[in-house]
Amino acid sequence: MLYLDDIKVEFESQGFKGTHIGIIPDKDKSVLFLESVRSTQTVRYPYCGGSVYIYENGQVKLKDIPIQRGTTHIWIFFIHRYQCNCCHETFTEEIPFKYPGTRITYRAANWIKGFLQQKISIKAIQELTGIHWDTIRKVQREIMDEAIREREKMLREKGYKPRIHAVDEFAIHKGYSYATCVMDLEQGDILWVGKGRAMKDFEKFFEEVPSDSLSAVIAVAMDMNASYNKLVTKHGLYMIGFICSRNLADMFSALFVWMKLEGFNNKIKVAKRIGYGYRDDDFFFTLIRYLSIPSVRYHPAKNRDEPFYLRARRYIVLFCETFITTFTIYVFMDYF
Image 1 (cartoon, rainbow, N blue to C red):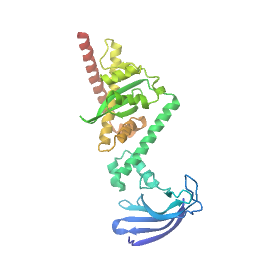
Image 2 (image 1 turned 90 degrees about the horizontal axis):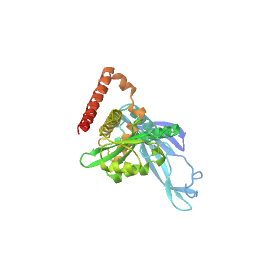
Image 3 (image 1 turned 135 degrees about the vertical axis):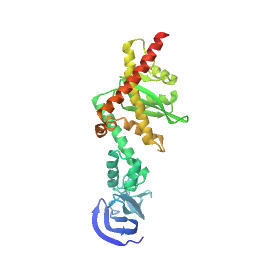
Image 4 (image 1 turned 135 degrees about the horizontal axis):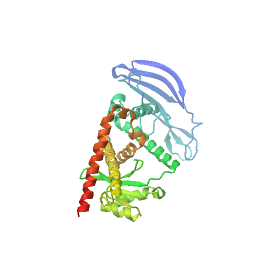
């Protein structure tokens, strides 16, 4: 490759030495060249601990933060592939600047994380950075997994255990594939998402979730899916269906649960819109759980932008619709 200008640089960091920067003006690209300076005397095969020699050389290209908008900045690492003198296995030296599972640097990954934390879409980030959307998705997945782990750790340290669960199904592709969600109605967290809606699919929830976390459950809210009903009863849990009791207090309890489930269904719809086009269900299910975390689902800036009377009207309409439906069922049951 022909470079118009070469800028000599001299620095050394974490086993690599920067040599020079090449610039290609017509392609708006700059390239930083780094060479490995590790000695075979200091490298050992990680499994048997044997001494090594340089088997062959290679190079790895990583995208970094561009010097200015609309340009591309590449780091090219000239690395060694070693062979063990004892077991004759080969391995490639690690690049400490490389973000795991991608072809970008840690600096670029942190740059992307900043955009994601500002709720910028993956498509917009791709246009801003020039980094492939699948790489951005991998960075987003780490953010979501970390947030879910931190949330679970915080609840464990507080000794919190959910008391009221909600179970519902939703369509991934209507008429073709479905999934089942379990939600903590008190905190609003989605605890588990699994593919399918049959009894054998829902059974995985009881297998994957620690039994001690279910010890405090006193009730489960769900629709009248026979598979769910049998399984919940099998595990000794009390079911709240949306057939209201003749007791007025129970009717308002059902009203409260119904309003909670309305928010639950809205979370699923939001996740489906955001996750549309993703290739794997696992990422989609993680996204659903991530969006249910209080620190994620609450957006102070968004709430400030919306006038108070609009928020109040939305809640009043939701309450009235739910109350009318519940009262109608109550009267209907009393009539018969």
